Image (cartoon, rainbow, N blue to C red; front, side):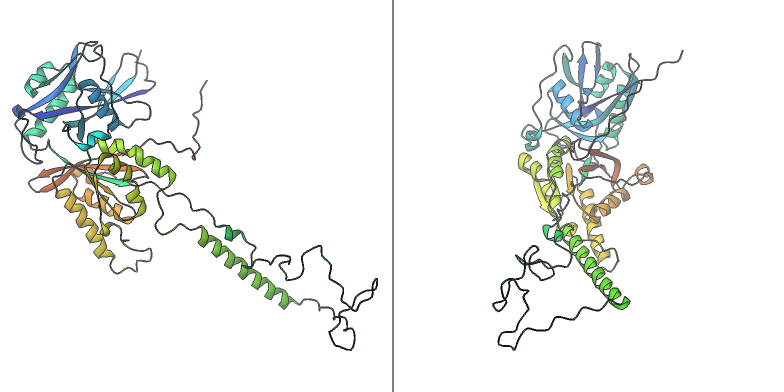
Length: 443
């Protein structure tokens, strides 16, 4: 009989952590590394009597990158940052489930790094789960590893070290959260016509409904009153009845009424329109706090933002807690062009945005964050793809949602920077305003 189809997928995350044997040596992107000069971090599981890489299951609602750094710290005590992703491992468990383990290249974070304050404290794994941790050379680790898939990951890291591709830099593009919908102005609910009625009078200019005209001083009690002119000879003649409306009069009145309705509708739409630079909405603010875990996993220590309110506000929690620097770039906030294409400086502005992205790619910094809104974000993504490998160039373009990040891993080759991997991650913040769809239960 064929094996039963797995009922669910078990998702785990971990890292292959490496360091130099010489603690004073600093990794330089693009520099070839002798595998004998590095060590890798391994754990021993007494339940399975094997040596493997630190990893573990992701908690409910936890991003995989946050699970990777948390599990490594729980099992080894090392606070790490993630680099380029490695091959995902998939294998069948005894109960018919499929386990999927996502791995990244990891490096230890310095003890005095301010970004370490962003991590939540964790408890060490019990000795019944992990009883030994050790740093071993790649040659010794190859003999100690039990699973063939773990040895393939080690061979990949060794090849990257020899070719100068083990140390990489990271560019992260962030799309800030959305703004709250603009409330409808109360003035737009006024009667169509644009003028409010005076107290005690109707909209047509007469007295309020339910009130009778006051008799004049010359009218006798109980007799019908007749309008008189002060100082005149006597009562005025009764007004002549209005003539029946002609079709021309009806058409003219209808045209005036249509113009009033159109004018009132335009005022309502103008009152309900978003401001030019709306602030971050309530759900976007909540997302900005959850983004701290994603940014901390990659060790972001500096950020650039466009001058828009949402691009700046989404970085406020990260900068306040971790102490990272945020630099405002005016070139990222200028609109690249309008819908009509009438902006003569659109090409020059687009060139400045692309040049800014190319400069960040050439820098050998650790992890750089770009918080950008509008068309400038699309230009930066296009520029990153232009430096990508053949696999990235041939893939479909990345479309970011609100509160989502695109992580580009850059290798410094002899011909310049090369983007070797692109991944997207998002926070799992729940929006109570959006109704959730219940899954149907099959009987």
